[in-house]
Amino acid sequence: MEVAAEKYEVYYVALLVAVVAASAAASFYVYYPLSARISPVAPPIIYVDPGTSNTYVTLGPNATSAFVKAKAQAGTWEVEYNGGFDDNPDGWYFSPGTYLTNAAWYASVSDGSTTRYGVVGIYGYMTGTSDTAYLLQYVTVPNASASYSVEITLFAYSTNGLYIMYYTVGLYDPSSSTTVWQSSGIASSTWRTSTYSVSASLTPGKTYILFFAATPYHISWFGSGTVYYFVDEFRLYATLSNPYYTNTFIDANVTDGQTYEARLVLLSYTYSGTPNASIKLVNMSSYESDPIVISSGSASRTATSWIQAGPAPTGYTSLRFHLDASLNTGGYLNMTLAFQYRLGDGVTVTYPLQLNVTDPPPENVTLPAPPGHRCPCPCCGKRLIGRILAARLRMGLVEPIRLRGGVVHVERPKPVRG
Ligand SMILES: [Ca+2]
Image (tube, rainbow, N blue to C red; front, side, top):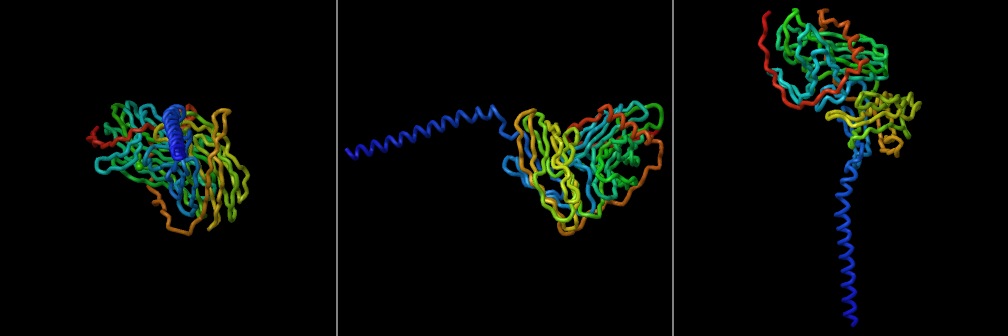
């Protein structure tokens, strides 16, 4: 009997285990597809490594925490974001003209002999004498003494050889609606890189608009044709004598299609020397939050203002986190931050963010090329450029660049003799 009882007991336990296992499997099987339908697998906002230079990003599980090391160094910095259009046109905007109404990003473009990668094209069918269309980005210059230069690589052509392919690069101050500096040239029909020294003195820490203006001009009163400008890179360089960092150190993308409010809070920080830092959020529409500010080691503002973060079109980022920091030689500034977001009056979600800025031992930095030529020709109407840009900005005529992603091989047009 004892043996039988033992057997019964064993069987009973085995059966119980089997029932529990079956119900667990059943509930798991039922639960998973329901869960997948009700809520997205990814968190509604995730951190993204922007891949910027001098920036080393480590993302935590689900990309909801991040540790960022930023290297401050004396020397030359790129001030703009994504100046090579390497993988997309993120950060850049287009303001169309009357005829130049198209802007698209291409994976590669050949001028007939040389292929370049990550290119923005501006084009349109011209029936008038001239036109102006802009490629632009809001840029905040370093909050320190610096000298500046602009570098652009482009080519342009028209299917009617009577158009001269003028262009202008410049810096526009939206707070005073004035062009603070600009220089013009005639685009080559093959890829060419030009570098310009910015002769104006820029106000440290101020936000300007870096613009490229495509300004084709017809040398007679008749004729029409399609004009194309292809820009491979467009960069603003700052050269500084003290350790400095200015860049987007992390991105955040909205994954569920909703529009949130977001901000960044400084929880604590440690430092050496007398560091200065400014951290702000920039959204897809180029709106900027008020910054977190540390001056000479003292935090005078410990949170950014709330800013909208919504879904971004393909190739754009919902939210960029921008840092400007200056250190003493060999110094550091380590910041513990909280990234917060909310939907209306809903619950505020917080993601941790650690940001360490250091001046590592010296190494070689790349200096920009010497200043390039200036266009001697006044007939591109360059004094009008700033006024036209001001009007376009007032009217909101600024739009994201469309993604094409294809490969463009330009057929060289036959010269037209007038
Ligand atoms: Ca490029």
